[in-house]
Image (cartoon, rainbow, N blue to C red; front, side):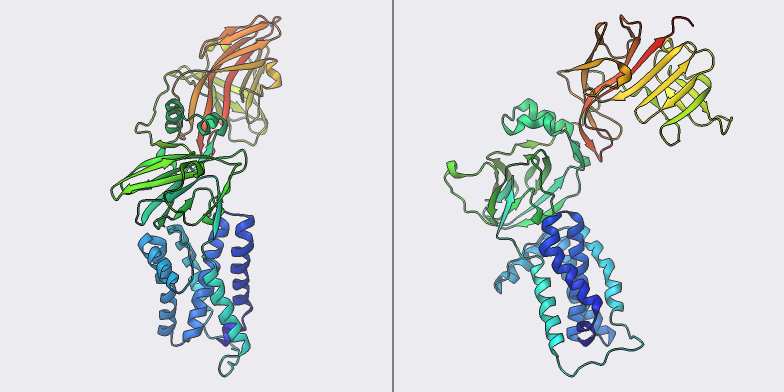
Length: 495
């Protein structure tokens, strides 16, 4: 105990545990602060128990570590173990809330450091006889910090919560969507959750792209907030939306949609039988018996998981005109070395730079041959969202841009119209719905059908390669909102 109470490292770990639990978790809720508590808490707890029982011989130290590590692993692997611990502590007046999260086991990486903490040192401190004031302070502070780290809060602030009214404990798994969502596209869900709108959301979200989630042991009448920082979920901002899948034995998997901005305070337990007029809109009730459960929502929409994974839209989405961009820092400038037609009709364009005349990377263009008028020297300038080919015959500009922000080189505004049609998923899993595009130039209005070159009154030829609205994008693989892949050719009259 003397080594522990006189160690700056141990007191630092204790300070990190206390500071994180009582300040950082509130200020910056999320996985980082949650895992920081696990690492610091496991270090403090194992060394505290080992110091109390005596770290030597090593067999005794191993038993001390096991008395902490085995329960820690059990409560993070199975809800029954978590529930047993919560019940046992409640008998002595300690209220705990345990989240079953196997990812917390990564904190076991701190155990070698905790074990070496007691290894012999060149000049070990001389132990005092009995427990001095430092030893007593270390013992009291360490025990209080370890017990307080998972004390159940008296209430939560949340925009949606599940309350267990089944009459018995229930295991509930909550899985969050691993990506970005166009919240505005589903804003009407909170007001008028029509079957069409529910189906649109269910189609947009691929169940395989949700996280493994966390498993909760929810007591009878217990409350589970769906967006509370107390459970290491990120708080929703006023303009944010949240989507989770809720699963339980005997309950068909359900998507629950929440919107930030309006939260309520709710206790950790609620009584059944309240006046329906006094039930908050944020409340979602789990009812039924084991094997046949159902969710009843008073506000947040609950939507069955889509059984079919949409593979093709009922209207064409098109695709990017340019692909296989050069592996160079952007922006770049180069010369076209040669152009070859591919079997699928696309053009394979080899590029060269002044510092190396050999072919360097290339660009693949998928557009009609009539939009490639170049027969001689051609230069190319590229940025992240555009390519510009310039030669004696004219200039070809290829842009990928949000419909609401057309590039200046287009010299036109873009009007979009939603197509009453199901969307499709891209290769990375993003869900995109088709849209119609109309250009408004100084010379008039020009509708752009997908995949057909159109000549405008000002002499430019336009080609729409793809247009759509991305509603959901796992891991941000596609930008949300509308996107347009458009090429326009300006041929020189005096060529």
